[in-house]
Every structure is written in C-alpha cells, then in structure tokens.
Amino acid sequence: MRLTVNGVDHDLDLDLRTTVLDALREHLGLTGAKKGCDHGQCGACTVLLDGRRVNSCLLLAVAHQDAEITTIEGLNDHPVQRGFLDHDGFQCGYCTPGQICSAVGMLDEVEKGWPSAVTQDSDRLSDSEIKERMSGNLCRCGAYPNMVPAIHQAAGR
Amino acid sequence: MKTFTYRSATGLDDTLEPGAVFVAGGTNLVDLMKLGVATPDVLVDVNRLPLGEVTSLDDGGLRIGAAVRNSDLAADPRIRAGFPVLSQALLAGASGQLRNMATTGGNLLQRTRCRYFMDATMPCNKHTPGSGCPAREGDHRNLAILGASESCVATHPSDMAVALVALDAVVVTNSRRIPVTELHRLPGDEPERDTILEHGELITAVELPALPAAANSAYRKARDRASYAFAVGSVAAALSVTDGLVSDVRLGWGAVAHKPWRARVAEERLLGGPATKDAFLAAADAELADSRGLRDNAYKIALMRNLTASVLGRLAEAGEKR
Image 1: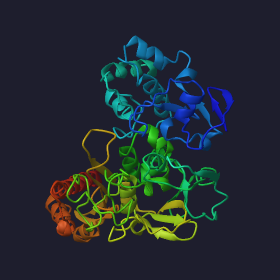
Image 2 (image 1 turned 90 degrees about the horizontal axis):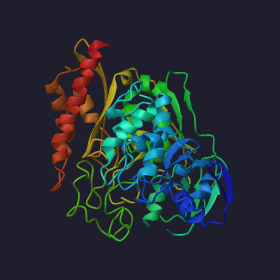
Image 3 (image 1 turned 60 degrees about the vertical axis):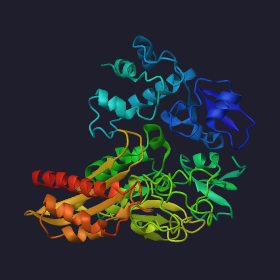
Image 4 (image 1 turned 90 degrees about the vertical axis):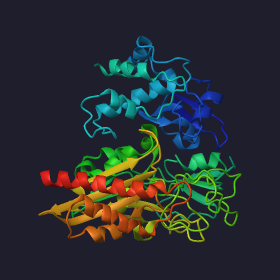
C-alpha cells in the first residue's frame, strides 16, 4: 500500500482493516492525530485529505492511496497554530492537533463561500459561525472559549 | 473488525459477489464494521466511478450524482437558490469533517442509530433477525412514533433524506428509478431490510424535479444540543400561498419513523385552505392521528405538531414577502 503524507510517499505493508489514523500513528510514527473516540464523533483524529478536513479514524487506508494526506506535522507555523498559542487555545492539548487541522480546513471552506447551519452567508465569520463550524471537534477540558479568538486571529480579523 | 477483501467497482454494472457491499464515503459503514454490526466479506469501492457531479436537467430540475459529497451539495448555488430546504438539511446533519466524506447515496443508506442496533452484543431484530427488540421496554426516547412494528421501533437518522422526500426526489439505481418516498421500508416483520434495494443494486443518482414551491422551503431540526447531534424530530417543508390560500405544500418529517416520513395526510388537509396557524396545527394533528408514543418518546407527538406549525408559519410569512 502507498500513502502520501505531508508530501512524502510511504510504501507500507498493512492489514486491509487499517485506518488512515492507525497507519499514521502505528506505522509512520506520526502521533499528532489522536485517537479519541475512534468512531468519528470527537474530531481528535482530524487530518486534511486533499485539503479537506476529515475524520481519519473512519478512512480505510487502502481506499485513500491516491490522496494527499496532511497532518498536524505537515503544518509549518500555520496562522491557526500561531492563534492557538497566542490565545491559549488549549489546556491538556490532546484534542489540539485535530482542532487545528479542523480549523485550517474550516477557514478554507469559509473562503470558498460555503454556508453553515448558522447562516447561508459566510461573509462574516462570527463567534456563532466558528462554534457551529467547529462543532465536530470536542474538547474535554472545555478550552473552547479561547479557540474562538485564536481562529478569529488566523482568519485575519 | 472482521477481515474482508477490497476491490474497486468495475463499472455501474458491477456484479456484486455474495457477501459484498458497496462503499463510498464509509463514514457509517466503517464505523459499523468496527462495532461488529456490519460484517461484509468484500468491500467494493465506488469512489472511482463517475458519480461525482451535479448537473442541471432540461426541465429545471437537478441530477445529483450519488458520490457528490454532502458538503459540496449543501454549498451548490443551484441547491441553495432553488431547493434551500435540502442545503439546510445537509448542514443540520453531522459535522464538517463527516460532510466532507459522506455521499448522497450513502447518506440515504445509512443505518439507524438505535443503541441496540449499534451494539452487536445486544438482541436486535435489525442486526440479528428473530433475536428480539429491547427498545420497546428499554431506551426508546429517540425512536419511532409512526409506522413502527412489534419487531422494530427504529428511526431513520438522515436529515438529507427528509428534505428529499418533501421534494419528490427520485432515486436512480443501476437498474431502475424509485421515488425516494418508496426507497425506505417500514419495519413490519422484516426490520433487517431498511430499503427495497436488491443485493448489487447501486444508487447512481438522485434527481430533483423542478418544483417552484421549493424556492420557499426550509428545514427545522430539534435536537438535544445546538449542533452535531441527531434529530429528535425534524420538519422539511415547502410552501406556496396564493391569495391567502395554500396552493402547494410539501412536508417531510424526520426522526419519527423507520423511513423519512412524507406527511401526505397533512398536505391534503392544507391544500386549498387558509395558511393560518390553526390550519397548520390541524393538519399536523391529522397526520399524527395514527401516531403511537411509547413510555419515553410520546413527547415527539407534541414536538412534531408544534415544529410543523412553526416552520409553515415562517414560510407563509416569507412567501408573502416574495
């Protein structure tokens, strides 16, 4: 099996049942993406698949050999990372790589003009927009309040 | 997870071997495989088939490829302008990450989230026919009030499908065309069958016929938290009012039955009558005449009554301003 992660091709001998998350963590040593619930409910495993945010725990590696996978390790001083640091957007940090990858994907969705359940008009990224669009990422420390200004900063407000 | 083999679909006419299932986004199927509820022998990946486009039809309708992702469909300008209820329903469902993988066909075919179905160690007539249904006496707070049977009180979890039944969408498979209202079954004594699809039948597209009323349409979802939760009840509605009278109305109800529920009784009550709150409530009552609440889900009867009147009331106001 061949996976392309953060711009590097890897040839791997994997059981067909291996998810992208397990391939990253157990076979490539990329432990940034976290296994929280392993059922697509918590978002800790979020990575970018061809630039779109997805739950890597629900992706079978065999089905995504032609995709470009980007993990937190592949983001290099991204404005979202800077925002989380500047605004203390985490406590224990376990969910943070998924939060950051999700926010990177989310800001791209806003840029493309995608609507959300809060509004069909994404011109203005309000607090409620950020909360709705980030609802697929859970944080058990409850560090949500500071993530909002962190994401605002990254969005350039 | 049980072992399986994997291959790509050879074409729309792929002959599915016994024990094989199609997989697209995989957001529900892979989860059910992890839980041991789904145990396919072969996964046949349809992601490389040319099913990923939304195309305009000559009559003003749209043809949505089965592999169009939920997020792309919700953002499509033609959907947002002509069928806002569908965009809103999609955006009310799941999370940004899940919508980026989940497909139109897969969303229709997702399984119930009844906790007994999701637990392979529990009896469940849907995952193990004949084993019984603990939900009737157990946790049924979010289960069906319409069309349930002694063997199953599960609900269909989709938001998107509720909009599609309201819009008279047609499901196109590799062998036939099926009104989406007829795709899903009521459980009867065969709750293991969610839909009328046969083994090897592949959804290739969903067609939305032109529907002027759909321009004034909306989706409203009641749930336990503000975002990222399944509905406890939802309403998809489209409404046209002419001179104060209902000239067209379409109603879909979610989280109330084994299938996305088309509220035709209510529609017939409303058509040609006044677009008033009293009329909306009376129509919902008529649709709910055969509803049956269990110990912990009877609240849904009042919920659907009020939700329906609320959505229609807003659409009536919006329709006047148009």
